[in-house]
Length: 201
Image (tube, rainbow, N blue to C red):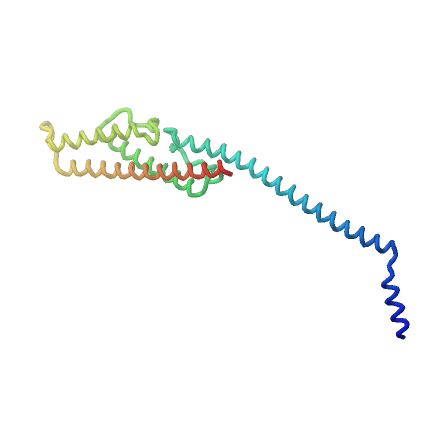
């Protein structure tokens, strides 16, 4: 029995050239497989990086286009572009929408004043919804009306309620204008920050 075990161990210790070649070929095969896997990994990373750069370039171009549009006088005259959500963020889209609402509310206030005082030429939104120039005309006109009433117009009876009502109208319109300006500054800063970050990528 012991002789059989010793013989078996001897046979295991003796390997043929073919067996040695088989082990060497197996080792080389494993090494080549690892090299191919490493090369594929590098190739995939390079492809992903190239695709990311191409996408970032397209996003950058669209971001610049949208950023430049906010300076247009008619920028906030319609609903917020859905592309703001895609190329910027939900927050930018929300800010843009809030500015549209504030512009609409402020314009309604200006139009309300124009109707009461029969001012021609303020009846459409063609002035631009941001309408800084129209807002300045409104401020000048309502200040004049308040001043006339405080000084006492001799041709008509003016009571204190009219003055207070005009001052309230002006204050609420000014508040809307101030809120719009603050939101616009936030929007512009946030868009510029994202734009600058996308240039670095």
